[in-house]
Length: 314
Image 1 (cartoon, rainbow, N blue to C red):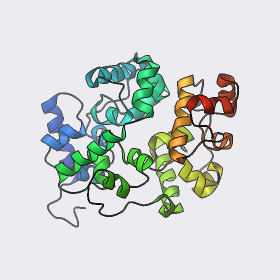
Image 2: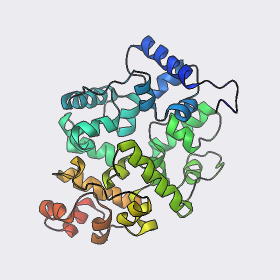
Image 3: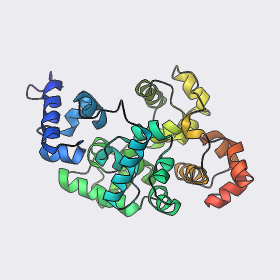
Image 4: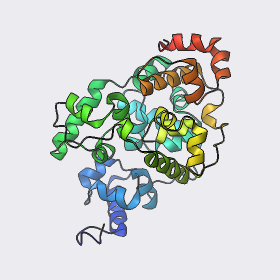
């Protein structure tokens, strides 16, 4: 970027400014705090250093090597107490002591972290399963007022409490989200049918590089810009997507798929229902869920009973 703009900062200047603001605040920075007190636009941070948590690591402001499981759970509990509700992953990334991926590494699943932090199943269900559409619309309007223009996908990931994929899953595309928020539609985001195979394969490859291993279905669900159903609809199977991306099939015995709770299973079914925007079939569960058919049958007696309990059956 500095080749195109002689006034753009270099990487070391950005890191030094992050350290300056971090020392002034005496705690882990959030995006909102840096936007208020930092010298440079958040877009420079993403372009030069990647996600904000990665930028903090490079600046020496985000040590994670000696984090214990109890430290991760305590961080979730403290943020929840500050917010007054179970934090969503975007809130953890923007306001928590550690990123949500660090919590997942230490605990295994987000629902498990929330439960161990003392939140009830009802509290978790109300906060995580159904993020209120009005919250998303209010957030878009807030960002538009701050920036002076309808937010783009980059703006949302830089300034919103929720990641772009949250809006994508709720509204289908950014044009619809802007329209619902009463904002000019601007440049239309890619519709699902316009997402190229190249986009999807590059996303898988980037996730594999970031994680150090091929992403599991759970990790795709947590970290990818695109939903699991988008990959499945384009490639017919995840095995085909991995093969075309030049990746071996992931280890399916990940911590997030072992011994799921009843809430984990119901949460997964509701997520598939939101991705597909239609009732969920047993075949959908077999192809799209991070959990096995046997795990649903052990908990509910049958796949059909699980779908009915989640309220997503045909």
